[in-house]
Image 1 (cartoon, rainbow, N blue to C red):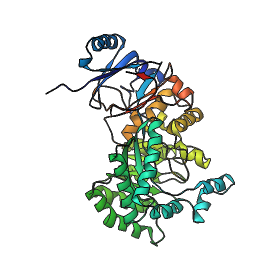
Image 2: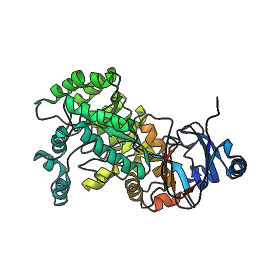
Image 3: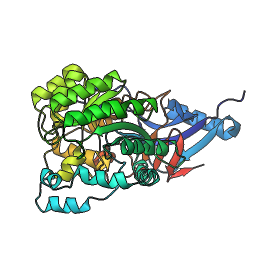
Image 4: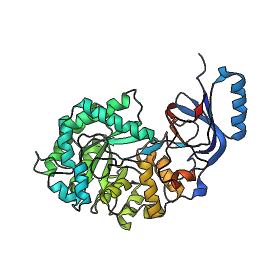
Length: 427
């Protein structure tokens, strides 16, 4: 059989591998592994080897002498290579528009008041229920392409704007169709968030959650539409008691539990700790006691600065989480209501400036620690055997990526070894 095709790409001013970093706790910038003037050797969508300056030059000479041994792609501009970013929490599959609600928020109405007047999540539910599967595929595909161009190569996407069996299933099928399409997009990780809020056709939260457990979740599992289940635990959403019962039942069906927790009030993080959730997301109102429970039970904290920006509120205590030893990922929360920006790198850099996160903590939070929050161990790091999800920024130092606060966009984007954006690369 013929040997697998190999491709050598470089030289890069720096290769920021994100390797050898702990998944928990604070990070110093000098802990980052940086390979200078090297390259990467790829085959069949995987990383074969990370090459330093000497090894890269030697292999480059060999390929220039005998092109049959592999493809050579030369970086013609100064560039820093890092793993593709991982966005561990989004609501990118939806229909409708809530720009008018955002204007009302800017004029002083609270998120809860807008929701109580018929806006908020249920506004998007009404629009999404009217949308066809093809319409959801088209809008999600467009947003996914935007994310990919910004350097996000893996992205979690939730349902949760259907709140009935038919529409929740339609949303999850739309996510799968985008994932299976040939159009450029990040790898999408589906999550069933049917427990977003109670729909108006049900009068009791417990009755609705029982309906989801018995009518929707078994079908979702049978069709392999999602392996994760989320629930929104807060005032105006679901109680701690109902959430715990729901998540225990979901785990018995084989789902991995995650939570929207402590966004407007405390308590959700305690549920996450008690049921052994993979992650607790939001955490704007978590106390030190809450965070210590998450650390002790191994629950990953996912902070969402985009929603804090969109709502004009204090973000989650990211600095405290890291100093307490938690594993913390940073995600965009891209959604039509509270986090319409959807720009992960800008949001992470704003969070860093406000809470004095190191460059290492920011970049780990959107790469290897973001992958960890999704239970993925084959991405977020540049090393042998990992998926070739790579992004390159035209700059001399990885410090520039955070220093420019998201204004610096990747010129190179590769997902599974396929180049989707390649400004500055020669053959």
